[in-house]
Length: 436
Image (cartoon, rainbow, N blue to C red; front, side):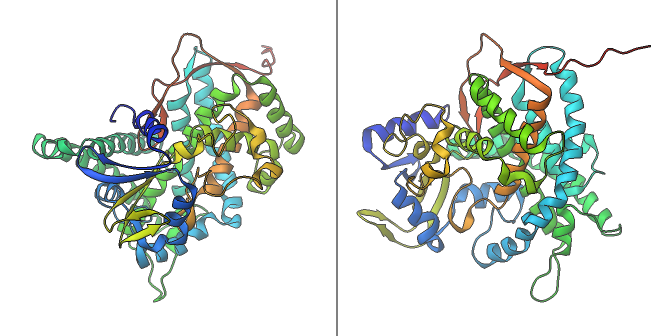
């Protein structure tokens, strides 16, 4: 289960059906489901009865503080309402130029890597997306070394949280061995870096980034967020906002590398919509086929492969009894690959997501950004980010999968490539010769 929960859960779906019970780490009972009626009930219809589980509220909250990802009830509703303003159309239009500037800077480093041989695209795309989200939050003045430190901390802490969750019997050892303290110290150092930027911004002219949105937000009594709460929300936006996109892009490039027909069609759409112009949020609805390709990539390799909730009170969905305190695992990967909801589910087929086919799809069988009131607040930002990076990469490079490697998914907090994905990149247009 620790090595590959997706493989185990999918095999259980085949044996026991859409919904079954198991013990996480051999200790905690959980209900696992891919049934869309159960999923809709838990995430939407009766969502008030289902809080985020201990995995997120306690373990993630321990490292990331109390923010949008780790709270519930009225505190969550208040924060959601305030932070939502940072992801409306006006703000995303304003962020487009910050994102493009960050991408241009990141691609200069990527270009150097690409010309030195095959590139493991996952860590490279992680760097690109993290820098983009960090600068969307804190503006262009965020230093590269600070971005690297916070990024490394987040990745290391996430892996530790997964171990705490899937191997709970080791938690006493983590405490006495110093492992818990080591990760807490990493978090404290990363927090200090970001807190310095927040306090500095208090005495600087207003910016056009997400940090400014957080600082300008006001509660009903006219008070704003404390520096510490802004830090928690910023850290949680960094966690949620970068790996989703880098993960989706990694799998997307992998899928497109074997489908030259889809690749060229996406390129042609970028050319016809944009020409040589940069991509902005206003352009996003114009990319019909590229959006289908992204959605199919998210179906095959959903970044959040599961969503967990805890029942506050006894509940029932049809014949399924859900006792108070039960953990319900919405098995997103299983729902995305279920033959009863998707024809030939293991095939890469963007035509599934044409407007005509979308109308035929069973609700709550496609959940790349969750569903219901707690669906991902940054879904539109993620789509903008993926399209922007994909557009620039396809304009600049041809690419192919390097031979002799095993491509396999590793379900951590995010569904990562286990061994990486190595690709070779060549320029689509040869640079003009230098004339001395």
